[in-house]
Image (cartoon, rainbow, N blue to C red; front, side):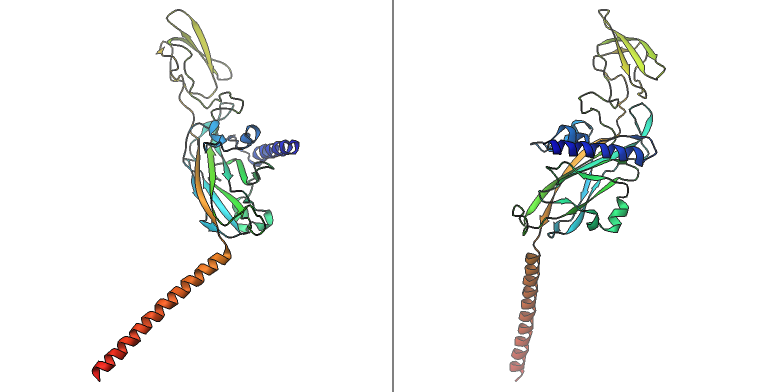
Length: 314
């Protein structure tokens, strides 16, 4: 258990370090590795992935993977995280920032991340600067990546090696489901449960907006007085665009600012078949024998027709 926690912490630290020193631009962070800190298994019993607990907006993703693979073969599973690269989100300090992306891939047991020696030069070139890691020592079949710059990495490529049923008794030649998730942009909730500044904040009470002030840091303080004379003040983070002005009448929970969220998380599932090479060869041999039999039958029929025609002419 202690080794597992140390491994998680080490992966978390390495990922943060790579994201900070690997890119010089200021980005809007998305950390799929946050799930490692709070969830031993990122997939709940109802199928929901842990990333969706912080990234509340839903966005589509796409999966590209082979339908069938052979034992010990290396293949790629691609998660596409499309979005408009011209759009920006506000960072934690309220400044505009480009979106980062992250992804998670839950493979069947036995399937693992391919080693560097097994990865083709083409995939290495595409994944240059990308750090893919197992979710934990317990779940080495679950892979996470991010945050990385979304402008150059809207396609997340996971090099995977298939298991060998002859070496692992728990693996069979079957069709296996796998699950993928992809995110762009920052989340609306921190792992601690606190809201980030990527939210539309509602009025704490109904009443009239009597005052709006702005601090030196750019934070906005909205003062609301209700019908009983009770005064409340709410401070909104820097970078948020207000929807209300002084003198407006607001309802409880009415948004005070525009929703700054332009990102979101999506998840999909697919299937992959672990095929036996002997079965594939046997199937090809059967098809060849069937085709050959059909050809011989046609030839025999033609020969019979010629004999009948000759007898009629005689």
